[in-house]
Length: 113
Image (tube, rainbow, N blue to C red; front, side):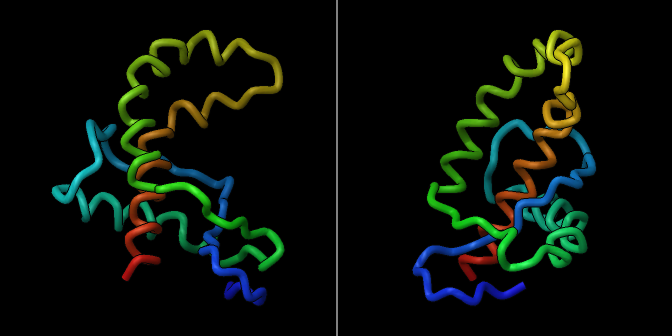
């Protein structure tokens, strides 16, 4: 899964198989490292199966992006039923958002180590 190019940007797998992990989070922070690790470990097999050309460079501040997303999550969840009515839209991306945020935070922390 190593990135062969000499880019200075970090790459991380973008996985489409997302499974919910525990309750929704209220805000990212140091008090949730176990949830971050559990979320990461659940998606790790899918991520490891990705080829190098399927990886994308990360060009955002992940903790800031997660904090922003967690902040708007209650408003987004209020429209979940409406989103489910949209053609060709898989509402699982809304339903599993908090798990996705945890995975992003865990992957970012691992890369930073």
